[in-house]
Image (cartoon, rainbow, N blue to C red; front, side, top):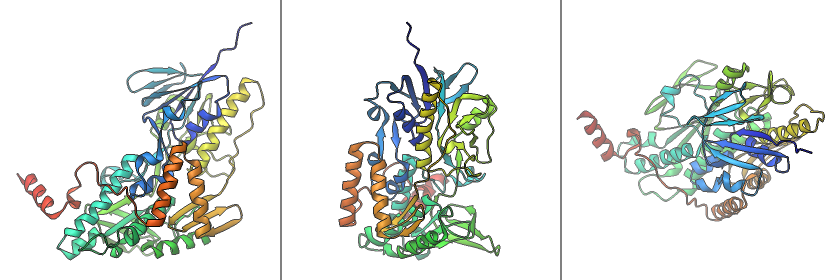
Amino acid sequence: MSRKRKDQIVIVGGGFGGLYAVHSMKNSPVEVTLIDRRNFHLFQPLLYQVATGGLSPEDIASPLRSVLKNQKNARVLSGQVIDIDPQRQVVILEDGHEVAYDALIIATGASHHYFGRDAEWEAHAPGLKTIEDAIKIRRRVLLAFEAAERERDPDRRRALLTFVIVGGGPTGVELAGALGELAQHTMREEFRSIDTTEARINLIEGLDRILFAYPEDLSAMAAQALGEVGVTVQTNKLVTDIADDHVLMKDTQTGEQTLIPTYTVLWGAGVKASPLGEVLARRSGAELDSAGRVMVGPDLTVGGHPDIFVIGDLAHFAHQTGQPLPGVAQVAMQMGQYVADVLRRRRFDKEVRPFRYKDKGMLAVIGRNRAVADIGRLHFGGFMAWLIWVFVHIGFLIEFDNKVKVMTQWGWNYVTRRQGARLITGETAPVWLQLPIEREAAVEKAEL
């Protein structure tokens, strides 16, 4: 009696969705290939702490091979998928290598979205999606304080100590809160020529309140908590221009324009789907929404291709509420587990039920002892919400040593208010953030 061949499952993307799908197939009679252009899984919800010096990059990243070393039916390939051939059932990597599949799970997430102004704004306003983004933001923020320490011109010094975060969603709120803590407490009294508590942090949101996906009472709590750490929340404001030394914004109600002199702009206003969505649409006829997300069926498959699944931030799933599900880790995790179950049921000819997202609540942290929680009918903020946020995020970290490192670092930071990962690394600073003598030399060199 011949044994049934093991299905070849290919998963593109080692984020929450991809990794949870792999883990959920640990005991299934399949061979799983996980492909990612990075060799590590990144815990994106804590990227803002790397950007503000609270954690080091390695604290929130785990090598994929290490994570999956004990799962014998899984292998990891390092590479970038650039094409898909649904007819031959293969994915094609950048170097031309092809990987065959019986079922394909695409979980490549999303990237920054500058609403058509990418070429103009991306260099001035980095977003926060990767380790490189976090290090770039950390460098810019810290260099702004260093440049202000040596700046003699009061107007330029004021602009150097002005920070603008565009977007009042969870990323913008958490980043603004962490910057406020950094300026108000962590770096206080470390400089001699400037007072870091005078830093002006502006959080700009186009809608009438921040954290729009949360209940109104929690939006108000978050705005108040941000004010307590020196953040000015500006709602009903749309950014219309970003330059080296300023941000221009327009009031959506009055049309009035306001210019904010600043050298540090951070982006958290929007995301667009991975480019692999466009490849899939071209190759399979899949529909895309306005953000480039792939329209999926009730079982997360692409129309006409029951062997292709799309999960996480790349998927537009509106069958449950009429609106697409939020781009949060919980959605991706549950989708990954669901697809693994679908493949298991198909193999044994069992009924496949539509995907149903179970909302376990939302948490957003503003700073030390400050957070907001939306859990079922419970809406609350303050220390208890912050404590729940701490343990939830430690629990979601993939490897045990990361849990220990983060818990230890947070404990030390909480007691001492010190953040030891405030290192300025990477490439040379932009001219507009260089110290006076460096700026003059750069200008002279350019003129030559």
